[in-house]
Image (tube, rainbow, N blue to C red; front, side, top):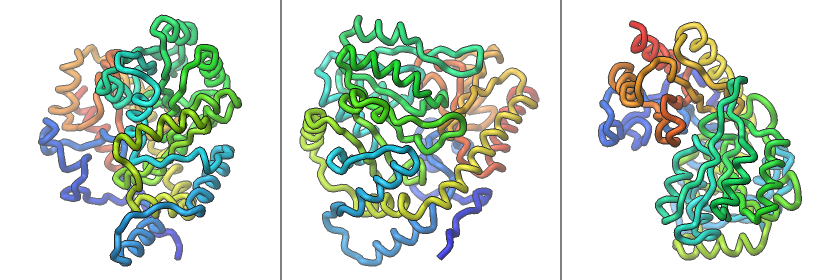
Length: 393
């Protein structure tokens, strides 16, 4: 059967589907009539092959404990090799119910209470949450915005923060959420060499690795054998195929000692087998989802270009930071002159939009808003029109 779900302009009513994005505005302190473009899930139906596989599995009617067979790894291997030229090995693989869960387990596995963990703000806010919630300290090698309208790494500061804070663990976000950077091979090698020099373990969150619009995604662990030896690489089909609620992630840990420490924390958390539906969805996505993935990627690329042109033509006091990867666009509102609270009020109550406020990504994110572009273009236009009207009408 051919792929059926290729109409990305189609608007699908997600209300009353237990959707975190659409059904919890009031509970989250938002007006009920806000248009939500905040959390990173798509408003697209996933591949029809995945739908069909899940329906077929559901019809079996028995949902006992399930585990993967060798075919599962071979499918995951093929995706990583084909799309990222990465030769993973089966004995590296640990499956977890999500990447954020894996981040928390890494904090427990590789640090002690009151240790410091290095991040690069402004960054995906659960990074800081899992560090602080586990009684560790967040230390930031804060990214800086260059004249080229892209964020960059201060490598001297990166090394100094490691030395000054006795850093043992670094969370790398690659591609970076929310600033949209696709780190170059040279940048990652500089980071990796510093981490090897100082004995720092690197957890590389590469969940957005399949959304690349400029440059090329470089798997951190693949760049040098020394990097492979210090890496925990977090991947999942959840962003690529819109499967977040399937709670399925593939974590690769080549170093046996690091893997043993990580698995000990998994055992302590009481995790074992994952949902059979998540396993089926992952296998089907990576084995049959290519046509849907390519079509979706092209549509999102057009959406990002649409936002770029719209901002340029209609929002003179707003700057769209150059988006190299992810489907999340970082908008700079600082030229509007609004305070953080005034901007929040304008976006939420005047524009009637639910975006991710830049302040939740760290203090350096204040004055920014993150907008999700993985939706029908008509919805994206409606959101941008609301911003325009709120600012200038």
